[in-house]
Image 1: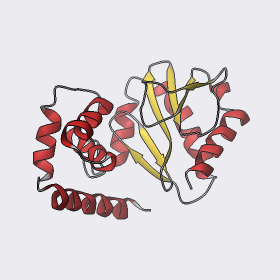
Image 2: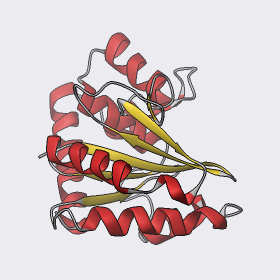
Image 3: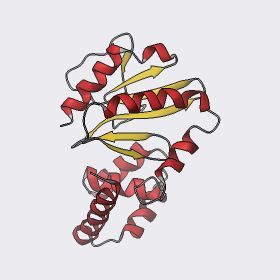
Length: 189
């Protein structure tokens, strides 16, 4: 899915949200921004439980409220550049991971947000986030895989992932990690 197709799909989702709920996206954004919550997952849960909208619509609203949706920044490279400001030493690791993931197939959608980059097929299988100056966090969606010494349960770090890998050394980006990313990619198809 190219960026323009993705943006159009997102606009269709906004239209459907408004038709189903009777509220405009701006009204939903106001509800999200006045919820009293700051974190994506907290606002998402608030919209689902208090306002009764589904996960996909709630997620859409939160992305619009936080200005992290596909149309928020015309040049997605700007989002990635901003993520690595002051963390430039981590950018080569990001580039290496993206290069390796692109070898899996041409059906990967890369969607930069404000704080991280999402990687999707039919559904999200990974995110990359420069969390601190010395660590890149890789979130994966892996069903049926137990945590181990490098692959930990994502827990409250990011509700959109099942596992997290803390990359504090380029050596972590080896065959084992790439196999785990490939497994997440395969499960997302």
